Length: 363
Image (cartoon, rainbow, N blue to C red; front, side, top):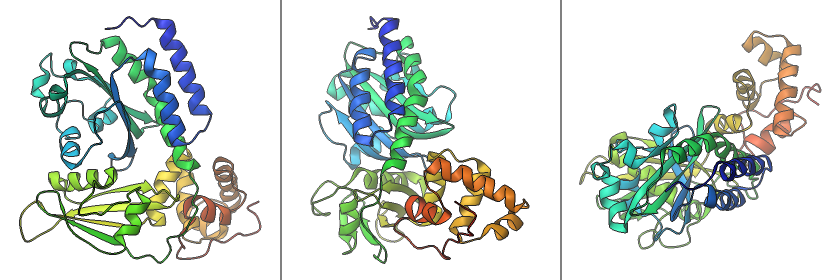
């Protein structure tokens, strides 16, 4: 099934490029990207995910004609790291797109995901793509076709060509969300899962953090946020401790940590939700803004409250060079001083260990 002509794909590529450059929010980006690819890569259903580029764990999803939202069991099957065409493997490989039938040599039944999820829903065609830009994966998508239709080699190649464009769109959406509320001083929340993936207990503050992740129900009774399920499954699957950073509904950053619990039945998992720290968020935002390695070093020192002279001494460069790097950082992040850099970009809802120092030379 590949009757789409070259001009259709070329137009779709150009339009996706314009969409990425338009700097829209994530919901708009996914809606429009999905519409643009409907003809260039025809499919019966699709699932888009955001991803933490540091841990390569999915943090959210956008469904297109899928039967149900993923629960813990689906998350456990769909994102197995050792199954064919895992998003992590595609993100790390030289080719970021893969067709399941090709990866299995025409025997898709070798895939747990196919046997347990795709075949029962009459799906044989699966095209997966990890959206990688500048070496970091910010999201991914899976397109599906009902039997007997499958995806072709040309379609896989086109999806790979789109990977960096779409990655840029995912990445750009990260820096456009602005915080609208403060979580300073709020205690971390704890959820304890039993061996059957059910919430055994939850602390009071967990409700606030779950709300940031879009959850409005009761933890023991209702389906939990996707990011929380995926990080718990990574911890349960033998990875040990696992964590992700997620932008909350109010714009604040939330860290979700999962760890196996010792004692009691095997398979119990503890999940902690808390306000993200500056050191945790800074690398992600530095990458999203396209800062160089040296600029990231300067940001780290600015977040520690270092002035120009101290930064110059610690990095073995001149104060003039420090100012040059700072001007470049300000231009990329859209601020005019290091104080704005801290309070508006990197830690809008958190205090640093030392106040950022404006030396009168920043602006």
